[in-house]
Image (cartoon, rainbow, N blue to C red):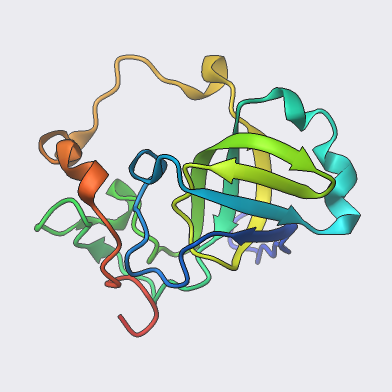
Length: 165
């Protein structure tokens, strides 16, 4: 495979109360109760069949408002720089985000979701069901975040990774 170009097309758009990156919660646990919608384009709606039985889904999306690539970043929960791959910062070589959100229900091609930490208008690339037996690891270490994780609920995007930020 190597370095061939990979191109993805959005399958839909995520709508949330957050009109810009600044002020958006930085992870779903900090966005508890915040609701939004994932609108899947009609040509992909058939792929939503049987998703209703899941309580949570993983949304994979494009950070469309992130600034340029940075290989070293100062994440929201620390004052020190870290390699971008040791963070969830959006200023990545491939600005792809993922969020595990609660699935409240589906009406046609619209997923009603909660615990949303995503900027309004974000292009949706894929949806996967969250399955604890597949998606939860055991004996986990969280590196540099260990001493900062307690601040997550109060952390918000301050615009540092947005275009022009």
